[in-house]
Length: 299
Ligand SMILES: C[S@@+](CC[C@H](N)C(=O)[O-])C[C@H]1O[C@@H](n2cnc3c(N)ncnc32)[C@H](O)[C@@H]1O
Image (cartoon, rainbow, N blue to C red; front, side, top):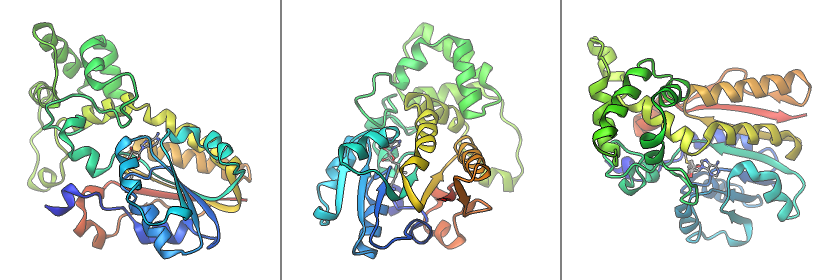
């Protein structure tokens, strides 16, 4: 299907409504990806400027096709370095920060990247300059540490069973592909009998293990934590931070950070309840079903 190959930007109208408070402002899109949000916002608000960040080389190629040259700058870097990035551009503060965390459909669908279950590789680096791949972790981490990774970052309750099975397999042969890993995980897990409704909404058996590995390879929680910690310092008064996350570990971090900063008078929480994807949007793009958006405003 069309949407499986092209990345469809999530919650465009909601992000536009919550993020843009100053129509002459400067904004940061921390996760440029395929440029979906950046280009939409530049089109809609003719006087804003955007600093677009992404650490994936593919995003740079996508950026180079853009028509907004003087209103957008692309920086290939980790968004946790946002303070340094802005300082290099002689910018002290901005009017809004957007992060649409996770991976894009392009990254997921490119089999050479090793994110998908079908991939003949086991890589999972969003930035090919990172040193450790999923293959290294799977083949060289102790059973105990693997189990901890799956449990902590994937909330996988059969983590120990899966880790032991991986260790047995890799003694015979190095695990080199996502496909092999998926088969090992599926064979190791005890499957529950589900009723028809649960079967329809159920995630793939190996999803949690893959999520955990991706989080560790890319230090995703650490990056988000650093961004959340530095954001208040970089926002003008009434500037907003808008975070879209795709799993509960990230959403919990965002929620706690906004709550803490709101209690300290640094932020006003704009979205008292998390914002989910509308039914209409879900009909066109089922992949974003787990997206959760939270917004806070600098006081
Ligand atoms: C869900 S996609 C964003 C899609 C984008 N909003 C669009 O509409 O095209 C997430 C993007 O964030 C990037 N990313 C994730 N973590 C990052 C980090 N720590 N630093 C920079 N980019 C990151 C990924 O490489 C990916 O391109």
